[in-house]
Length: 192
Image (cartoon, rainbow, N blue to C red; front, side):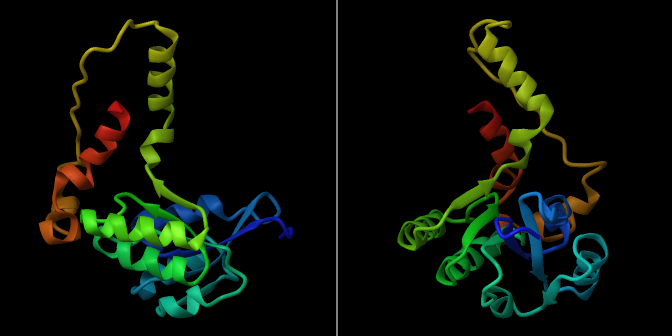
């Protein structure tokens, strides 16, 4: 690991947290130091697939207290984002959080106030924004190849049959407020 590698800690290393395996590149810009999760299975997966020497714990405070972590990636379920982002800023860390920022407008406002006060970097992850197909669409639009855009139509599919999606935390509106925020936010982002 070079001294200028960004040192990352991950909150929630299952599901979306699996992206951490792409960030662990010691000597090439970033290293994933450790992770916290409520699941032993997820923590074991982290050790096997991201960083076998990484620090793992079920106690977020222990991860956040580490001096060898510069930035926190909040990859946990939507209803936890506000709390975990606020904790990370309070611990003096830069923050990347998966979308959505929060499941309430008040939560978003709280996060923005904490970000400004912290003086740290803050990014919300819209992973689809960087997919090749959407970059190609943007290039086609900007080049004028398809003319002026006057309307957009979106059709969004949720995995094969959607069975897994509707039978975990995503399927409960108190945890995500529903599909408009949880899934259509990608589509709104693409249209924008």
